[in-house]
Image (cartoon, rainbow, N blue to C red; front, side, top):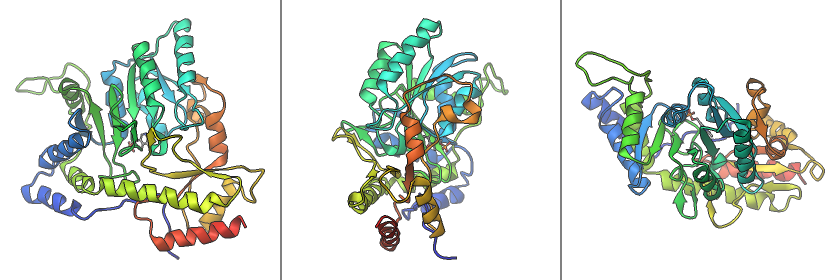
Length: 377
Ligand SMILES: *Cc1c(COP(=O)(O)O)cnc(C)c1O
């Protein structure tokens, strides 16, 4: 079997093992301890000490906590970007609430502010005010977060920013994940940095963080015995995983730069090929970590469409992947309300994600170039 080029494999910096060894040497093999405190501290410094950050077991669990803290309950509605991974919306259903899906706009591929406002007014007319908004910075591209956040403020609806793919991205020099009432990070194996599996909840105050910590550690009341007045979760990060996170923080900026270099590489590669566009920042306000580089292919102008290109790459042992299937088109969400104009459906039908790991080697890029240049000659 020849060498496989992966979409977004883990990329260790070097000192992760040292922190993991510290955990073993001190016997902090539990979901608390020095690595968790250190990792949270590193993340808080990264967010300029303006935020309080709680490390948890996954990005999904941090969305669940954010919805809980936004008082989302059985029967409530939550507005959620349709063009995203299912994990953005699944926790809405854990609480018995209903997702209402919002389409994307073309500039950022993320939640369309106009459609969002229309949906809010429509839901209010219908007699149900949405409890929260989940906006996503998909593929690391910042959403039009200034507009979305002012709409959220105008209607007094909590904003949850799913930055699972956008650690290191910013809008107008301000970091993604820091705009909402809550921000969400993921350290899953395929993300910009990894703890093998993990996530974080970005909070605006120590009170929010303490509430989240209480829920994430089984909601134990203050008593000598175990006493519970509300339902809690077991969502804390392991101190072993957090050690990997501390090591990864040392290379975060470098890895963002490497992913951005990949995006430059693809822009140069496709420049000469008519009908293929590489997704890039709409203007200088947007700074993407380019977690994954994505392209769209105009079927009428190209020899291969997105699916044919994916199969060709696969034959050459190169992993690529269709863009996220919009959630309003997923069988499991087929009964949910959707507001949109067809943008996310177009992207799904015509797009492709290309190998984008920060460890992508020169010889791998050369192989990709050769295959692409031959295919679209
Ligand atoms: C990965 C991801 C999540 C979920 O994060 P996990 O850590 O895998 O639970 C949520 N939203 C988006 C957009 C993601 O890409």
